[in-house]
Image (spheres, rainbow, N blue to C red):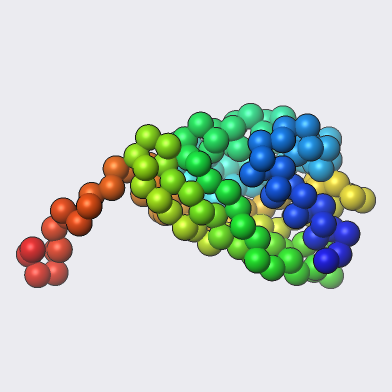
Amino acid sequence: MTDRAEVAAGLYRSLAEGNRGDILSRLHPTFSGHTTAGLPLGLGGVYGSPQTMLRDFWGQIARSWIAAAYPSEYLPLDDDRLLVRGVYRGRGKKSGTEFDAEFVHILRFDGDRIVELTQLTDSARWAHALEPETNGSETNMEDGR
């Protein structure tokens, strides 16, 4: 694993543990986060500082889901970026509905700190996890059952 991959892996561990101090230590003071459009609860968008990302994005996730990111691949790019591929796994806190959603993160570095995170994920799976499980009682629209 490269040094950047180790920094990224540490970020995912700290997020799973809820270690705010370590999360912030991995993010550059000028950090910005760019999250997937269409995420529920208005979470898609731009977060302009480490504190805003922690409070308004990751904090809202912690309030609404029990979830973690499981990276499976770290691919260094030609410049100061790292592509991380993996899956989010979790469930809605109120609904109990489980979800898996693949992700791609592109992390840009300034030295050994993350200065930018761009997230791509399946927003529909996140939204579905906020809905109560239907236990197979939904209608099959193709055959009318």
